[in-house]
Image (cartoon, rainbow, N blue to C red; front, side, top):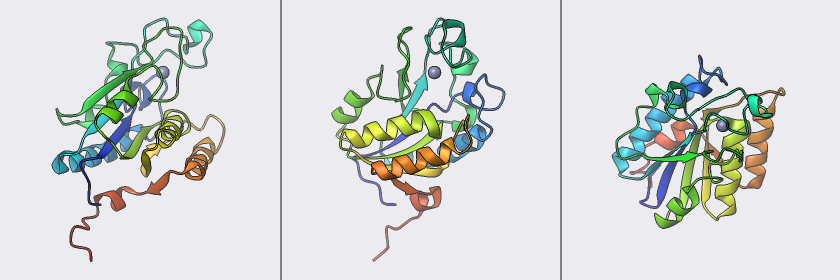
Length: 198
Ligand code: ZN
């Protein structure tokens, strides 16, 4: 696709704790990191911005079971589990947006407890392409929020993966994103060079 300066890539929570070997591992997380590495290289070559969210919790975060929350401890600040997956291999120009830093506050959207909205608005972003983890939590809620603030939102359907705590949570999330107004495309659609298309 032909990218404009007002386009952005939005990479969600592609961190070690959400991939194999992590504390809240998603089986396909590693494959998603490889896909988003390709997307990041494409945006970098076009000179368009790349934002990557990073779940960045204090050790006593409210979402942890130890504090009565639903999840095992994950993405604790300055631990290997919180690092972006090495295969993501982000260019130096990528903008990291940390979220979930308030101990008492949990959020499944990249817009809550972060400055993502301010950053996208300040950069004049009109269209985002979204991939990362997990389809049924952070991808779903972030996509609903990007649509809500008036940004045209494309979901890279083969660069996301779901927790699927209940069977088909991921499919339901994808359907909900679509009915909310997200456009569903593949990596091949994104990477197709249509510069010469008439
Ligand atoms: Zn978290």
